[in-house]
Image (cartoon, rainbow, N blue to C red; front, side, top):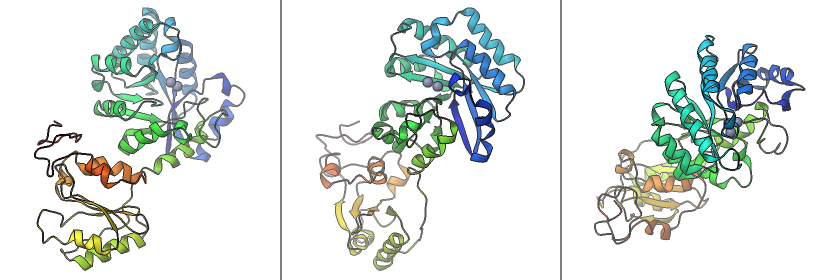
Length: 375
Ligand SMILES: [Zn+2]
Ligand SMILES: [Zn+2]
């Protein structure tokens, strides 16, 4: 099932073959889409288009770059269009937000209508589709001011870094991911895709713009979404091997080897990693022939963390039980790197803290260390 959460099929780029294209969705595995309005006139065309296609939903709103056309009356029109439609087609207010890439309209105008449209969404109990370009701080400030967590929605075509992503995820928002993910220079977005829970990312095209590789530069359509979905799937994890043993070194060693033979890209050993010197898991990992990068991390929780790389490059990780029930541990710092095949060194692990079991750190970059000065 593929749902395009952000498309502009009322755009003139589709005038030639719109109906033909939409008719081909089902056979190409595109199940539904949301057509997102960007101006008052596109609200009308979007509504009209939604009338004739049962797999199409509508978002109504005015894009920041068009916001100079808005007035009390225009806002009232949007409200009326949303409430008078009883067929369940209008599902969101959007796209709304801030765009400082273009000089017009001025920031004050954009901000004013961003506030007003957020409030309209709140009144109508509809989620929002946010457009934010080169306006990270102001967007976040306004959204916090308006308690947007209570409204909910998508930050479409997410273009900021991990820290910003974390803010919006905390607020309960979803991040819209499109063709940019497949671009060569998408490093920042790849990092976001790594850190965000997969179920908080939604697919979008923003067509006719932003076609993914291999069709970059051409007119985009939902038919290109599988390229983005494929790329995004690289960040999903699948359990292919799971076995439970006693604290028996040879069984654990054997289990690690068989997990790798089964094709595992990552191996976790989640028991026998406490401070008890009789625990057998560290020895078992060593016996696989893996190169031990670090045993013991300078931060709590997770101080008995072990990282090793097998001969074929697969990371084998010894995880003390506390990383399973603590929210942010050394494991959470390292996991995105392991998934991204980005080798982690002993120096980097050591750099996360200083002072043995973190009882007296001089330097600590650990996010929630309850012991060191990092708190
Ligand atoms: Zn947009
Ligand atoms: Zn758009």
